[in-house]
Image (cartoon, rainbow, N blue to C red; front, side):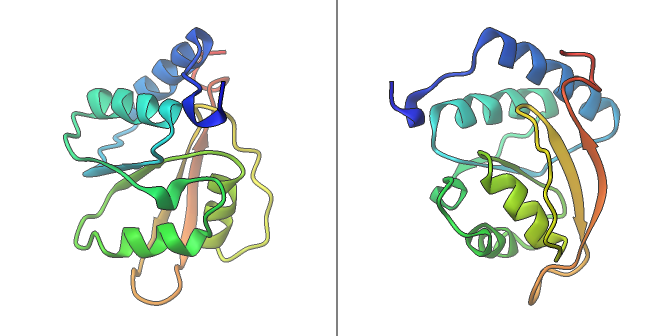
Length: 143
C-alpha cells in the first residue's frame, strides 16, 4: 500500500481520541484545521474537527512531507486574522516546522497523534514562536 493511502490504525485512533480529549479540556479551539491530503492526515483532521467543533478543514499540499516549512508558514500567514490554526501532517515535516517557528535548530521527538502548541506573536516576516506545551498519547493516557 502506498504511504499516502495508509489509514489510521485502531491503536492510532485510540491514541488520537485520548489526545484530542485532553486538548479540548485544555482549551484548544482551532478556527481552522490545515491538513495534508494523505489519508491518515485527513482522518486525523476530521476527528479533530469533530472533537473541537471546527467546521473549517482545508487540505493543503504544503503539509506533504517533502515541502519546506516556509510553505506552510506562508499559508498560515494568509489566514489572518485567525488566531488559532491547527495543522495535521507528517514526520519529520512537523518537527522541522516547529523548529522553524521557534527559530531554533532543535530536534523534537514528535509522536504520532501528538500535539504541540507554538504561539507566534507576529505573522509578518519570519516567525517568532514560543513553545507552550507538547502533548503525547502517553501523557494523555492513550498509550
